[in-house]
Image 1 (cartoon, rainbow, N blue to C red):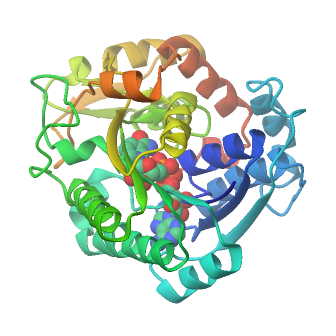
Image 2 (cartoon, rainbow, N blue to C red):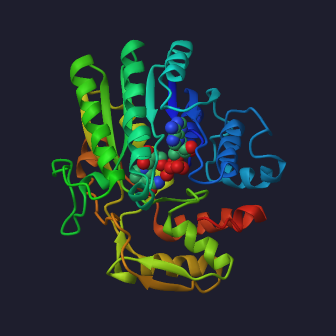
Image 3 (cartoon, rainbow, N blue to C red):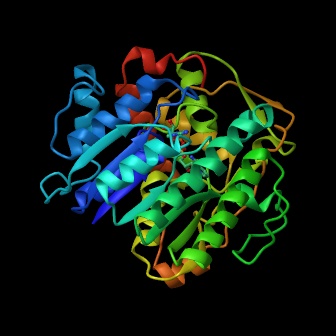
Length: 359
Ligand SMILES: NC(=O)c1ccc[n+]([C@@H]2O[C@H](COP(=O)([O-])OP(=O)(O)OC[C@H]3O[C@@H](n4cnc5c(N)ncnc54)[C@H](O)[C@@H]3O)[C@@H](O)[C@H]2O)c1
């Protein structure tokens, strides 16, 4: 299959590209390298993907990354020697409908995995218009190009934020999603509703993946993620702020990157007209435990202070029984090993990465 992956230079998107290439799909990546976090980090992700496809494009990532690349590939034994698909990349903005039209008519994809977005809650509170442009208008552009080019499969990377603040119990796909508490969550709700309308009117097969983050693992998005920030701050002897009224006892339904990628690929392969799945671990871990694991892996104390909650930040945990039953999705990574790998790769990264200021 030929698959367009949007957000291909981002954290989750780049892992998805590599997993598709390793199973033999031809991947067309789109990303505009927005400045939410440094371009250099995204070029690194892209370099890794080029390497996975057998094309050693040192333009992305550069020679300084070779050792890190090799180490990361050891987590995927067998993948390198298996038959590979191809990789092609467009540096384009999904908000530009003409560019998106051109890519679709040139590439004629069989499916789209849509992960490009303005991600993150606090930034959306300050920049709601940007979030609607990218997350809503950008999604419409892609769906419209699917309709025009008879692309019959679309996976939408949604978010647990659509549920708003539901700490009382695990949320199911049947729960109300009209009470988002951040502009980010609201744009994901809007994206889902637009997907549903395109599926109804044009018959496109659309699967909504409500991603339960933070997604963590090596090369985790370098901005706005607690774990990456804690590792960076600890390396640089800085104190980290822990948000939320429950302090060290607040818990997040974090998912290891490989489990999330597995969920996304299972959504892609699932044949139906329209459906929605929670993809997470359903096993929220307290911040206290994350800190303990980081300290073990870094062999250093994490300095922190507890402060009040971010506006719009939510805690919810996923009921994943539907994904387990229908998709045969089953998350496997345990937090200690996931953290160990994230720290291991962090330690191998060049100094510019370890000392990034805005994390
Ligand atoms: N990481 C998480 O914990 C998490 C949790 C829930 C949902 N999600 C969703 O998963 C998806 C991927 O998240 P991520 O953590 O990999 O974030 P990321 O920021 O690393 O990746 C998103 C990518 O999209 C690109 N992008 C943004 N605007 C674009 C535009 N207008 N045109 C083209 N490309 C554009 C960015 O440059 C970036 O590389 C997003 O849709 C996000 O909302 C992530």
